[in-house]
Length: 260
Image 1: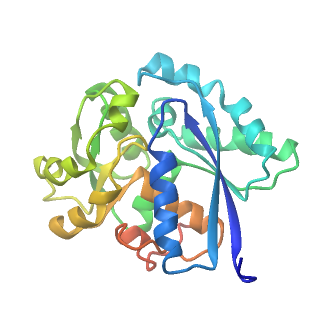
Image 2: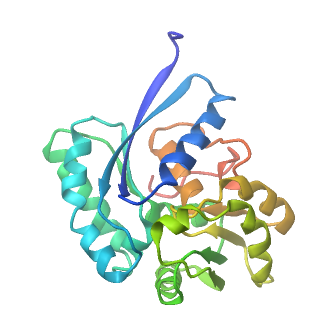
């Protein structure tokens, strides 16, 4: 290994049925390594049981957060990301701060100083970093959960001008959705007032191959829960927020969010 290469250890807390965060996030970092080979990324995951995206199973999964964080603490990661957006947003406005604080407390008790982010908080930060006051969103959720996500985003001061629910309740089925379909789905949204498009407001719905093509077709910034999480991970590690082919947020020109 080149003496100038640095390995960055990324801890992830994911639902037991999540297949996408552990593929899209490493894929983005591999793409980044093609330009910046001095930084390499190693991923470590802890899982929380959840099969169906229902309010009951989301609440039950959140109870497992402390145990999952404790397991990750033993790996001494450089940064920890908890990656189930809707599980956090369904608990009410601002809950990402509570979840991040809980994980931070567990890590600190075990002697880990790793910063903690959530996909929910990262999405808000990504929207803010793009300077977007109005967004449209695509989700795989049933409409009531999409409404909770929209309400959460609006409570943070961002207007959701339109939302599309694909209504897939089974979490494994969400992971099997073809990301190429998003290149057509977005056209069902009214983007006339939108400053940005959230192509996947879910870390389980694959979207990475469509982020850049849709951004070019739509003519406005396109992000996802996954690209926003990658952005915040790079910010917390103090690294350039550059991932080729992953949209404007990861184009290396967007400033860090205030307070980070």
